[in-house]
Structure formats: structure tokens, C-alpha cells
Length: 235
Image 1 (cartoon, rainbow, N blue to C red):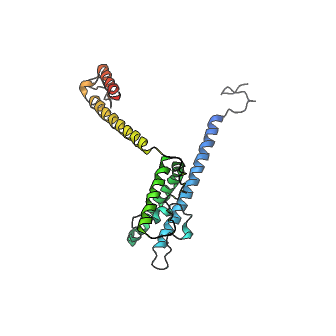
Image 2: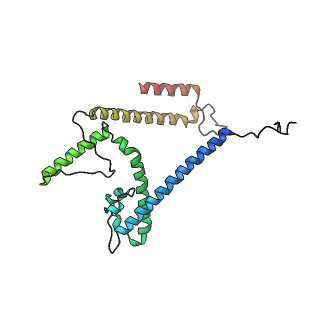
Image 3: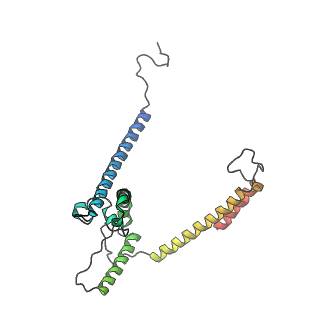
């Protein structure tokens, strides 16, 4: 005989397979996030200790030591212009923890996008090559050296020199950027005009705003004119 929920005694209990798979997926994502968070905390703690060792009164170990080269964010702190070594002793522990955490987080972001940004043939790679060329000229004219100076960037991305065949149309890209910024400014101006009418009770369908709406609907005619204004300005 069927039971109270309509299933026969022989039938196995119904289960939501899709929901169960979704829960498993969420669990896997959460585990991955916890693992990454644990790793970041460990790196931040190592960087914090390295900073403390670098400012010890006796036998300090500089951040440039090979002992620390595998710590995330070490290059960001080592090459920063901020005088973190001069931090007062009474606030050093807190300041170093904050800086270490921020450096590790920034380094994880750099590793996520910077290598792709500087891929051969990209605009960023072309600009970096031009910068290195200018730096080499400055060093060559300012210092007497027979060997070519090797420059490294804080992001530690291996530099890929230009082959001499490719070129990046920087003038074209700058022109497109200016057009984009101009269009964005025009859009914001139009939006500000629209907001003026949206906040004006004379433009509302309900002059009294009896429903106490946060953004009362404007009249059909006002809406049509605002759309026409936006269309004309957009060209």
C-alpha cells in the first residue's frame, strides 16, 4: 500500500541529485578557498617575520637575502620607497603585519594578470621595451661601463625583448583611448541631466508620490524626450 507521502514501500526514498551535486561543488570551492587563504596567511606570516629580522638591532638579515626569495610579496616590500624600517618600535608589530598582508595580497593579484598583460606582442610589453631602451641610454651616457646593465622589475616577469619586426600602434591606441574617455564623460553628463528630471516632482506621473517610491516614474512625454536627447547626443 502507498505510504502517507504517496511512495510505495518498495520504492527508495527520493533524493535531490542536482541539489546534492551543487552542495558537493560548493564544498569543493569552499575547500579550495580555505586552502588558498591558509597559504596566503602563511606567506604573510613569513614576510612579517622577515621584516622583523631585517630591522633587528643585532645581526639583521636583509630582505634581499636568498633565504627569503620564495616568499610572496618580498620584492614589493624590499623595493618600496616607504621607510618601513623607521617605523616606531611601539607600533612596528601592527604596521609590519598590515604591510605584509597587503604585499602578499597584491603579489597574488600580480601573478594572476601581469604575465598575460606582458605577453609578446602586447601594448604593455612594447611600452616596457621602450622604457628599457631609454634606461639603457641613460646608464650608457651617465656611467662608464663595459657590460650592459640588466634591469629587473618588481613584478619579476621575465622580459621578452622585441624582435625588431613588430611594432605597436601607440598613436592609434591613444586616439582610441581619448575617444573612449570623451564618450564616457558625455554619457555621465547625459545621465546627470536625466537624474535632474527624475528628481523633479513636476516630471512624475504621480505628482504626490503617494506610493513613496524611491525613484518615481516620469511621465510618458518626459521619458520620450529624455530618450530622444540621449539618442541625439549619441549621434
